[in-house]
Image (cartoon, rainbow, N blue to C red):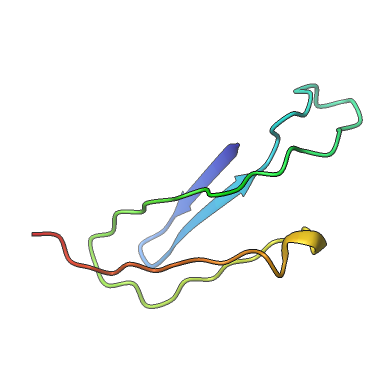
Length: 75
């Protein structure tokens, strides 16, 4: 899984790109990546979370993608 994280004062962007099972040659045609299930991502923040946006360009996964937001405060 290739991860790209971008952050500004107001926002954080986390991109996950599935390259599992694909060759790592940039100039060759890519195989279809292996489906990944049950991924869990933990993001620590130093403030309240106002919104979370989730997007996928994978037509087959659009109905299957979901997320659970846990905003419990740490002790």
